[in-house]
Image (cartoon, rainbow, N blue to C red; front, side, top):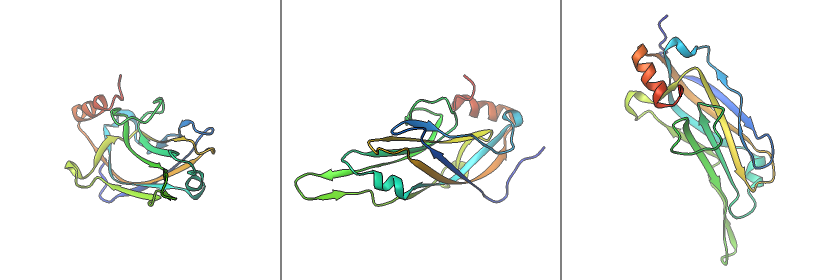
Length: 171
């Protein structure tokens, strides 16, 4: 079966933390593509959104929220050096002492584009994708949202194996 999208698709992912200031990975988005169909997801753009309740919970110096698009639900944290963390976005509140004002995050919607990468986007396995959220100091179980624009592309068997090994799909 030939898999090749001509136009971009859109998926929306939401995750709510399992408790206050915990690391939580949400449910997998199933794209109707099996692990051994040699299909890749080409991510063109990720739009991160921090909701109003989460924004209002950033009320003390150092309070932070991190959202990540990941390929594995067994990871324990969002680390840039983990290939299973495809991308992440964070917000941190900074209080400037002595000057009498707060420096609040100004963008609660951040759009990150990958279309300038070779191949027109970031390539990841198409079988599962997850959204994760971590916070520190917010005092609530936060909800995070992303919108992902993507296409699906069929790979040759050796290309898919190389992709899967590089992202630790097989360990």
